[in-house]
Length: 498
Image (cartoon, rainbow, N blue to C red; front, side, top):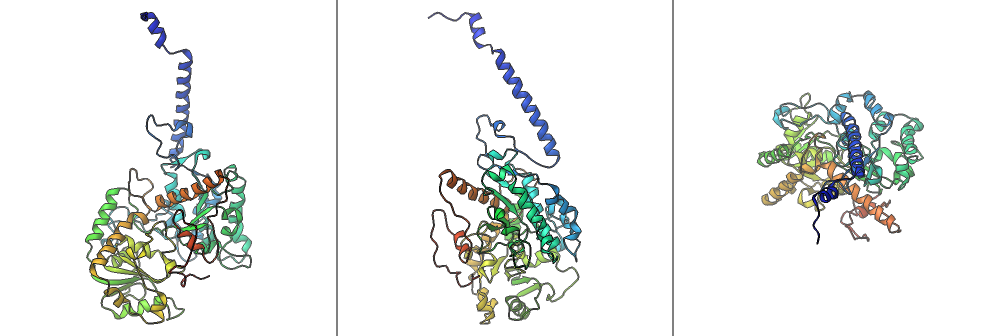
């Protein structure tokens, strides 16, 4: 075989002019994109490149199947509502709570009594989650500018702010104006038409009941009754067990860490925490009736030397005694934290208690077990105590006797499970990088994407896929595991009735 000459070898390996053109073109496109990204990052957003630029030179793209596209909504749907923050409450200045992307003002020095972390503690209002979620999404590692590769589409509408501003308006047209505008805006978008909104999701930031007003009037607006919104996945701090397209996510608490080390340090601190009291209650009375769970709790706690309260019924009420620091100090001092219904079925205090390493005690399954199924274990006995309402109100059951009978080794296991759950129910600092713990946001996004993926597979296979069932047994469908189709009798049947 004749060997190649030196000149032949040189001609064989020298790139053609076309090669240089291609390389130069790629460089120019990369430069253009980098300039676009730098402009985007200056506005606080972390956008992933389009799919054709997302190669990884030998490494798989970690965001494949996880990309989220976020609408850049007209400011009337979010930013303008923030600027109008004084309308959020007639009695409280809520503008301080919109600071720091919804975390509110920072709490320094660990708060009153040093009961909060030195770093990452904020006076966070329970209804700021719309802003908090949006801030996280702007920094989401798998945010994409290309809707065609998105696994889900996020709609950053601050529906909770709009509801709060208009809830007392007797003119239903005014209450529904912005929600109807939002629905009309969405259905005109090409991203919407791709799946009729079935790949879209939004977080409303308040309880579902604020968005389910019927035609005959009543509380709230009609946002979640519109057909377009019914196609979406809707996240709220309290979902309805009788509707199929809304899912509950945790209320925001007061600790928003920026590193794994901060989370681990807090968990260790809660493990070492001395619990001087058996049980406690943080809350206020309701004047409607003395034959309620809340009234029974306050009466029994007031008679017990092993219980303490915070609120108007506290033994030594002082101005500001319901500050985050005071509340956390109480919750950290007890083995069990009682969680009766709040204005709805749920309470923000549930997640304050978990943050404090305190075992929650519930009196209705819709207060947690049929709400936060994405974030809390299905085996509710592993982390909580359930005392049926009728046993307490109708039979004068002793709460303290029930709690005292739980063996110490079981209490220790339950508390450890509660402490393990802490990262799952908190919302970390949006600017945090390299954290391995999944927070409440991460868990919610994973479950939304999983729900949308099942819908996509059904469309690709040309079959019907029903995942939104309304009615008396809607909550049972949410409890089904993958592969299960049939529902049957459940231990909570007698508690959940329309």
